[in-house]
Image (cartoon, rainbow, N blue to C red):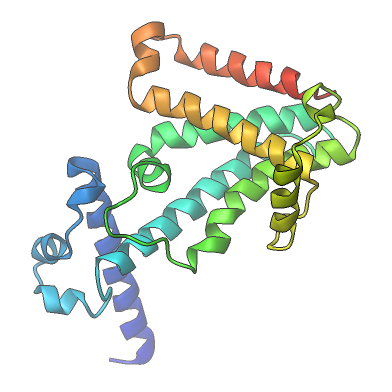
Length: 230
């Protein structure tokens, strides 16, 4: 077998392993993830599976990489449905893309932002891929702020010295915007994550029945106004 065919076979096996892993997570939760169970479903021995992933944590890192990449791509696609000078439109579309991706991919979203897997330590190589999604959010707000299109009370806040210092330190690791932009991005993320999590836990439908989407759209509009987008 030539090297090209071997690589294709290996890639197909890696894809199948991750597909079965997501199936396990969807049916039984992330804590149920088992390399032995995946090996059984693929008709191979557990030691054979270790040729592809040396342990559970290596597989979890691969799953997180896939999920973060898909999530970030969805945010970028939402943002880019509006032209660069439509700052409020880009912000609204990106926030809606966040919510939509999460409800379409609840297992992936839960692995990204839900209860951490017991014993799993966040792999160092995940840093850049995890940071990408926040940079999308930060970038939409940062570009609007730089263009003078954010004029609300939030933008005029004086941050505590300790927070300012922390946000300045983040600029040294690749977050290029001013402390107030980073703070606004973190605030927005907290709110959108809260709305999304309430829906994924079925609380919003208990109150709103079939009217969840109008609620989400209204809340994003409210956040847009609170930020002072012009």
